[in-house]
Image (cartoon, rainbow, N blue to C red):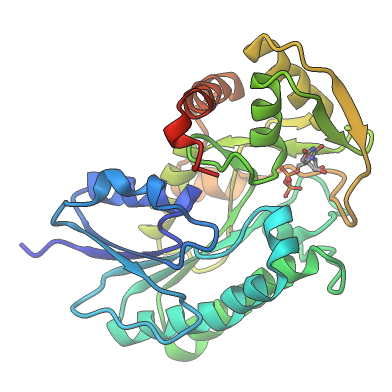
Length: 321
Ligand code: UDP
């Protein structure tokens, strides 16, 4: 029997590369597309040479050509960390809008099932807590984060339009903070930044009072949730994340303890429009997909700390930013 073929845009990124691994492990052929703007070949170099893995360096805001059949498409291409989309605002808007349009066009042409990587950022600085899928969000369209939030909101609207107007099979996953190996050292998000600062005994930079909250999901749980969603028949958005909510101060304390670091916490200015709270309501994923996270934060943190320890101790890996 012919293998199922999966296209993963952003496949050289943090989540995308774990998805490449997952779909290959499930016996499918993977076509990974990435322009390497924030992705890194190191994330997928272990897959080169396999005959069931193809890498195309391409910017998906331009026409995408993929020969042969395609069964599933996962659209994960986008800068995804606040400092990345502050540095790359136009690219972030373009990949969420023009890029999503091109990838949906490919899905329509190939009659493939399309899954959009959306985000908890569509809820903005939320007025309801925890956030369930029927909440429409509180986003500042013209703030610095608006480039990501609005691009993803537009991408959701476009996905639903392709579903309703063209009858395309579509899925939308709203991804909450996720962490694990292959996050970039310089990606600027709190969790990898604190781990690297702790391992180097540098100051831990907490923004604002540190009382703002997030809920951190280990990457393997996230990938499993996305996989189950793809094979469900749910066209409307589904939150995937870990509902265990903690303050950023607590996160910093846990990382200090698990690394045994001598770093001190220093407080810096809070970025504009930084959400005060964030916690997924995962009732829908539980009932619909029979999914819930299995990794405790401590288990995930230990694996991630080991990963960064290795990267920092091996000079040849330090190009891996
Ligand atoms: N944050 C921090 N120190 C850092 C980076 C981030 O205190 O070095 C804060 C940030 O202001 C936010 C929280 O940690 O309140 C989570 O930020 P992150 O960039 O990880 O992602 P977000 O959840 O905001 O998208």
